[in-house]
Length: 63
Image (cartoon, rainbow, N blue to C red; front, side, top):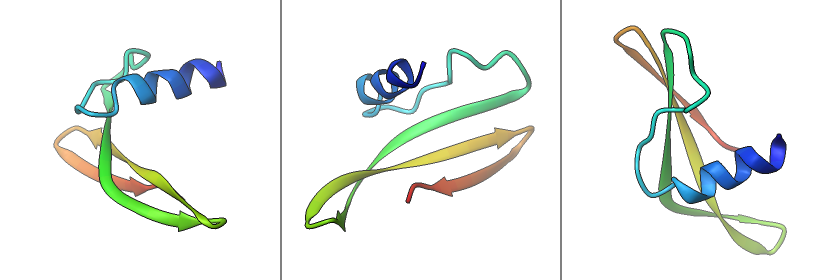
C-alpha cells in the first residue's frame, strides 16, 4: 500500500489532483512544489498537502 501511494504521488505530482481513495467530504489535493530542500547532503523535492474541508483549506508541509 505504501509503494502504491508513493507511485500515485509521483505520477500525479505535477498537477493538483483529488485523492482517488477519498470517499468522504474531505478532499486531498497534492501539489508538487518547485522548492527543494537540503537533506543529508542532497536535494529532494518537497510535497505539500492541501486538505480541503468544506470551504476551508489547510496546508500541511512535508518534512
